[in-house]
Amino acid sequence: MIAPSNSPMPGGGRNMRIAIVTPVYPPYRGGMGSVAARDAHELKARGLEVSVFTPDYRDRDQNPEAEYLAPIFAFGNAAVLPQLVKKLDGHDLAHLHYTFYGADIFVWLWSILRRKPYVLTYHMQPKTGDWRDFVFRLHRVFIEPLIVRQARAVLVSSLDYAQSIGLRHAQLIDMPFGVDEQRFTTGRDGAFRDQHGIPVEACVFIFVGGLDRAHSFKGVDVLIRAAALLDAKKDWRLLIVGDGDMRKSYAGLAQALGLADRVVFAGALVDADLPRAYKAADVHVLPSTTKSEAFGLVTLEAAATGLPSIVSDLPGVRTLVTNGETGFVVESGIEESLEEAMQKFLNNPYLAREMGLKARRRVEVGYTNKSLADRLVGVYKRITALS
Image (tube, rainbow, N blue to C red; front, side, top):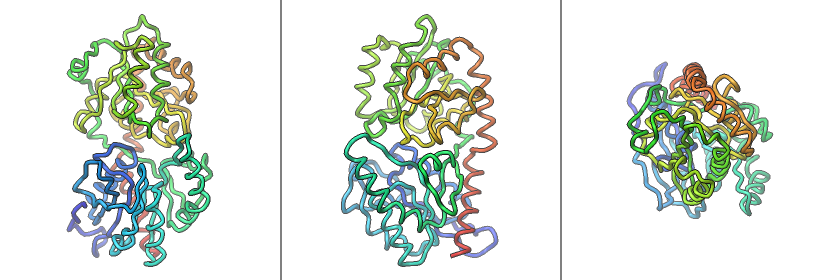
């Protein structure tokens, strides 16, 4: 649990007490947990008392900043946590990171019983392509309307994504995720290239994301097939950062396509090395294939580092790139469309830098953690003043 700060809230009075409820939390890698952690740290820095509640999945490393609750039942990132009703007592407001199957109903119950408000950040509607989709649909029909309706506000990373899934609420607030522009900065890291055997002059395309089955929607297979279509006479590399149970499969695909010496698997990196990986690259690629990708924090990390991005034309994801200015938006799941955009950077050595500088400026204007945290505190204040 994050220790409470003794700093007073602006305007005097005791500190606002916020409970963050999230299915995952660092060191587990994933966008939802990263956003929850960012919120926790930024809110504490502003004098709020913050508690983080997340499931104890037993097989994952834990973070002392959070309180891990033993679930009655857990499957994947879903967890039944009835103890939340008691744990949330004493807080002025709960912030639910959604979807969180099994725990969401107990946040709802706490709000009903204690007459306390909660907000939720609607991250995505998961889609797996197997039997679980039927369970998800049942939840969306019978449970999700209760959860959304009781929330005092629903925060979305983009109204574009909310509209695409038919999400409606009287207080639907556009609250994009942010990036630490002081951690991710412009520059080059030749040492990282040397470490992974990447030539100094090569154009490096970087992908950052999970390589497990839960993140198969990231489209790594599409990216590797697109890379196989690139001009072999050009000097380029594909740097894949991440790990998971599908890494061996992706490596096999690269081998089968004759790209064993072009595709570099860097594995999962410690936090200190992630900015270095971006600085070793020229272009970021997010080739996601379904609406399970609703935003893409990696695109902001890349932009803050001064890299343009090639992203799929998916709701939410496409909002982070100004097509033709800070990167390219391409047809989702189509290798030829992705390859065409990648080839543009190979044909014009100066294009990546020009677009990357514009991407960095866009981050500084609208996507810094500090500015977005100030907006979030404003939402909290309005809601607690009405409760």
